[in-house]
Image (cartoon, rainbow, N blue to C red; front, side, top):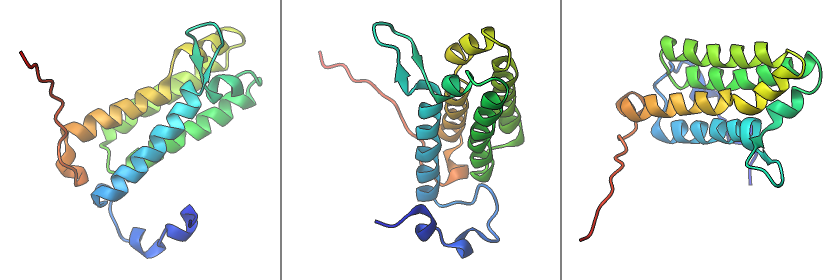
Length: 152
C-alpha cells in the first residue's frame, strides 16, 4: 500500500485551477476532510452521557497554544475546500466558524465548554457538502438525490 506522498503526482496538481479536479479527486479529498472534522469535533464520547467531543476540545485544555494548534489544524479544512474550488463567500463563512471557535475557545473554562458544544469543523464540512451537492457540476459530480419510498 502506497503512502499519500507516493500516490501524489506533483505534475497532476501543477497548472490546475481550483474547481477543475476530477470527480475522484474531489471525493477522496472530501472523505479526508470529513474524517479530520470527525476526529476534531466528535471522536470521543464521555461515558454515561450523550456528550461527544473531539480532539479540538482536548487541545483547548492547554492554555492559549492548544486553541492555536486546533485552529491551525481546522484551517486545513478551509484550505482544502478552497483547493476544491469552493467560492469565496463559502470560504469566508467557513473561516468565520473557525475563527469564532478559536477565539471563544481561548477563554478559560467557558471556552472549553464552548469547544465541546460548538462543532465548527463539522459545520464547515456540512457547508461544503451542501454546496457540492447543489453545484455538483462544478466539481465534476452528479447531483445526489435523496428519496424515500413508501410501499403500501
